[in-house]
Image (cartoon, rainbow, N blue to C red; front, side):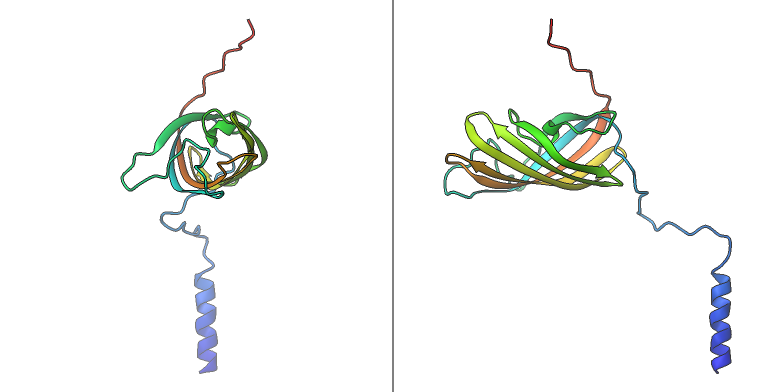
Length: 173
């Protein structure tokens, strides 16, 4: 009996050693090293918005209700892979990306922002994945303002590449 089992195992090993390429599972995608540069249309749904200091949150964003249309805007990814901070920030915010990892299908970033009329900081954390021409991410925001209005917000963002970025005009004239 033992010999029969050993021979069956050996036969299975030999059968599996053919020159045939391994099959890619259906629905799996190849990992992309870098996202393509260009202009992206970004859609945003606010999944959660809550005050952390029991005052009105210092944001123009509103929590999305069932059936609400997402908010849409456009932003660019430069040829060198640099993502415009406006991809994730609210209109009017001045942001810088402190840490970024956008490689091998994974996107993680930390943004530090300031908001006119609301002294303090708006901190954002981006966590998502991308393909060659699209991404999906969860953006978590926490504020540290010197006055009232601190809030916590979670947004779901999706984006697709819609074309090339137009060069920004030089305002020095």
